[in-house]
Length: 520
Image (cartoon, rainbow, N blue to C red):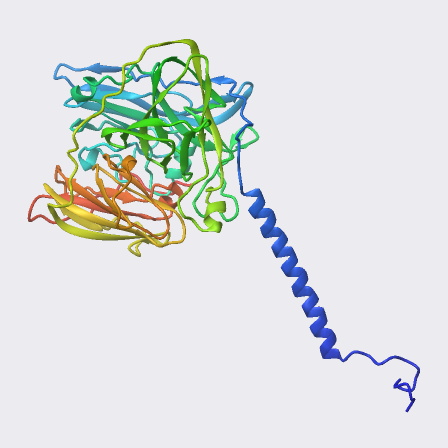
């Protein structure tokens, strides 16, 4: 053998085969890890959206018209709503296919007073079946417009009820099981305002469209001329758009003529949570939550609204100034994954407020508003627990033929809502306005102490609410409770309850009038 250790043929010693394989494998794994890491970095960086400072506010805010109505001999106020397909020019010259009520996009504002009997004649001129749900309204289950009250394509429906709740900012939207997200995204939404004598007697801004402005906020993404309905990678919360519109107006401004302006804020987005504030950090006064006025105005600089929630705020303006209503990043204790991919890091310039050079004087807000009639939890007849997960509520996905809970008319209950799902959820209950008793064992902050029908629940949080079920009883027709992140709702994160007379029991829910797939 050669002294230099060669193999006698003059060649160098070769690396053992096993070691070569390990090195090659290691290189492949390292390369794969680099690719995956680079892809994640690209996805993570690209997931953050901000329009702050990039909106030119070139469009005057469209204010939804007040819906025409007639009053019949018995005092019933009658509205007509027509669900229809059309085209909308969000950008001049570009026609976007949309759906709307009585027009191509969104719908008129319905308005009625406490004590009035109302009837809404709904005609479905869409190419598919849908529903109209009166979100926040106390009314019989058969008139609620949930997935059991489907209106077939070409069909009609005329629910009627007596308004038996305080002045409030409610809204209406479709509720077809499995297709609510896309129906709302296409433009089917509108406000339903209620008035009462107690609210009218208070010195609050109250001229619709002048110092009392509806603000329906939605996030959208355009794919050319069309609205994009797709979910991007990692977006388990549902659809998240890259810009916002107000009342269907992109880059909107509103001219303010009064010292105080009242904004009726509605989060009509399907998944996005907004944290509203003004661009200069000034405070404003919140005067109402989902179901009506607070007991007293609350001064704040930030206001969080999850999908379906509403709030009324009053802003003081100075002559000639311009302020921006902005949505700031979400502060809800989310982990870095959900904070980024759930839209928590996003921020938007939503709408510009342009004060006229001279402003009309406004009356000062009163120190107190209305006394609360919400249940306190002290007289709750029973308690219920709801575990919120994408896999279903209390481990069960929505089943149209199954009644999940039966409640007794005239009783109050305490419901405990637990989200330990690793992502944000919220919880909406049909027919009732509830009181939030506590969040993670602590008293709710002032913005959440008024009447609520929808509540945001961050992951790792527990919320207790007190509800009273005043009827009417209907053992055959259920109401819904569900997550109002509409993708979650469509995936089955919803349950049903019926209200029965004392000693009564639930019947099997009646099937909807039509069946079949809602998806496109």
